[in-house]
Image (cartoon, rainbow over all chains, first blue to last red):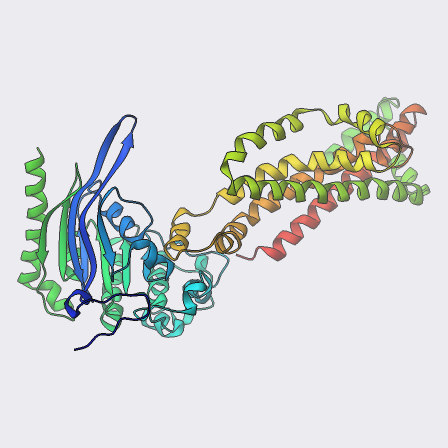
Length: 280
Length: 231
């Protein structure tokens, strides 16, 4: 197959193209007075196109920091990374990264419809020559997929916490970026709401099949959503294990009750425990 | 509460005529020459409004500058603070010497009074953006203009209106106090004149209408806020 590079991009081989996110020995440390505190040490990780990968670990293991580095929201000290062959800065300038934060961060003065369309109004320069990998989605369609069709004209304050988070996910999908980065988007919600949101996310992701890097501290959530779970441990933040999740897709409630699912969840938890014992 | 205040007032007025005039006398005074009071009130309100507009415009401009160039902050804030702690009554004579017997000194005093509350509120408002929303903007490489007009400005609107309410009443106070000297027009001058002639009715009539007009001005800002902020 012959792949021609779009203007300004180099696509060397088909195989390289399948690697959506490449992290190579990423390091990050914070300065505390005179000493440096290592937050991440030599993180190497590859995410293939269309994969859903979860960074899982306790607080302080640097999973959110890593995600922020990938998004270009924070600089890193060593190593290199690329998103579809671009640096985080290039990717954000072309709006090729969709960031879903911990809180919905909707703008209270805009309707839900205007909120989810935020990416259309920001950095319009990127839209003049859009990157071929980015396909903006129709707002009404995605809102309907998220079960928010009737709330398009409502203001964020009129919605429940779970609905607001769904709107934030919709905003992420509507941008249509090939890479989506989700920083514990469900952490502020109660368990029942998180659970239903997980299924919503799976459902919508099945339709869009974006490359997703997802951060969570819930093992069940990690296994249910992912193709690959990256177990991270703190002090300093490092990758303890990478576990492939070979459960069938689309994931159904039956899958979530299967013994294969439960044994994967306990394997993920065990890897984390081993990492901590080595620590002590 | 108002009824109780009124009753106490009347009690004092009847037993100690030199302390307070009775409310009906004040009312009668106001109604006997409404033109006199309204024309003087207009002089004061006009100076207060112009001063308010100048002071708040400067304050907002400065706040926006300080937000974007943080090194200016440590330079600007002490100066603003110094301006705030300088008694308005003290600068008023100096301004009359500098600008003469016209409206300019009164407008300047009103502007100075309005400046500080607006500056403080505008600075905290413009800084109060949701950090996670800011990250959503930054993740798409939003320009400074995008961030300012689509995030900072709308976020700061409630703060700006709170500042405007403080600023407009401060501008009224500034305007009245500055009229204590160097002019024969305005509510401040009316109060001073009444003092010279020991005309308690005139004095309290002037005080009442200045208080009421301040309330009306705050109410107008409030109305504007309700029309602008609908979330």
